[in-house]
Length: 160
Ligand code: ADP
Image (tube, rainbow, N blue to C red):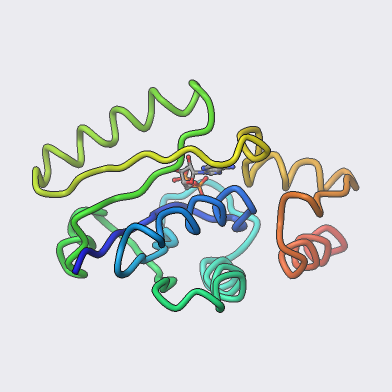
């Protein structure tokens, strides 16, 4: 039985994240989507509970995927949930620098946990939660890049 963890801020979950989750869920018995709840985190559009709810709704049809909240060291959470793999998505070269350092740091902390990078479908390589928020706040249509319920939630935030 191999468990994997896909961590991130998911503020909010996008079709790019969902693409990675679909691919990863085929490889592992159980995939945890770990939504970060860092005290020091930069400003988020959605609270951690909203980010968890939006992700849970998007993933309700996938029975080996579970959305959890997470705070603290990622490798500790992996050890606790018996995850031997950390999944991360790679879009463009610009992701590489940060991801490379983080993967090596996590390996230093626990050499038994493997970080696995996956590429999404090319139609999502330019998609990020932050760009979606930025364009949505300006009134742009992001329906190609987020599930319907996420689009509605962003719209509600924009109207506030
Ligand atoms: P973080 O704050 O950790 O970057 P994100 O929620 O932005 O959290 O992203 C979580 C993971 O998903 C990261 O590995 C990121 O590179 C990846 N990711 C984000 N958007 C996409 C996308 N469109 N395609 C593939 N991977 C993505």
